[in-house]
Image (cartoon, rainbow, N blue to C red; front, side, top):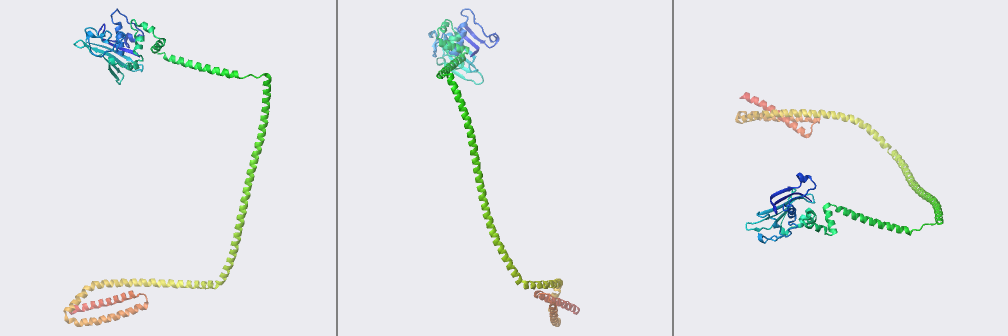
Length: 444
């Protein structure tokens, strides 16, 4: 714990507000300084202000009364007596670095009302670094543990070691050795050496105990005489030789065992090979028997085939004759195919001719219809129509003759012959109609 600054306002003999900064100027540069002055100048007030700001009481004023109190009825040991006469408020504020390395501000303040009544003192402990941690409480409910946690000392320890107020130095000297040692360790930071001392003591005690145990065990052993030692050495030599002999015998036995195992493995391998050879012989014998049967069957098939070939010789000769005839028929077939192609071409030509005549007939259809209309209207030409029927009969006869002529060629089918016959008749009829039309025009 390190005090950074102290703020005093209207406390005891100090009137007004003053700030003492222990971290700057000559006080900050010097590691040690002394507070001096005449009696009543405020030397003890400075220490009282520090104690009041941290613990809400001082060695001279240790009462913690929170109720409002009149000026003329206040207890002599009440810290509110520190208010400078004639002032209405007082303040003590300490800024310090705690044992955790953080910066805190602790304060104590009190006010006097217009009726000369003291208000309840107020205390505050606040964390200054970044996040504010505030503890506010009345003096009679002051949480000393909060301050003790930050400073590392209780009020009694602080009063006996840090303040040592007037006429109380003897209390430190009269303190018990354990309390005095604990206080000094906390002040000087040497408590770690106490822990080291305890650890050294414990280790020494354990080492001494282990040493005593070893000495006891050593005393339990008895030294051998020279004769006993020689006997032990001879016995050790004999046992070493015996061990060497047994190791050699064990090696021979191990070699024999390995050889026996190797022979057993070889014998087993040979038996497996012999069994495999026997199985292979049996398989080959079976295959030989099957091959003999197949050979006999093949001979019989060859014999039967030869007999069948002898029986089929006339058929083969006949087939050869047919092949020769077939070769001749092929030439004839080729000739027939040529004739067929020519006939097909002729049919196509005749069909084209019929199509053309059909077109002519369609073109002359209107003329024929005109002629028929004309004949109907003109009775004079009736004889000519009768003559037309006679001519039509002749045309049919001519068509029959044409049909017989086509049948003599034998090239058209029954349907094609009919079409040809009808087309021939139509052609003759168209010719006759054209002639009649000409005659009718000449008559008209």
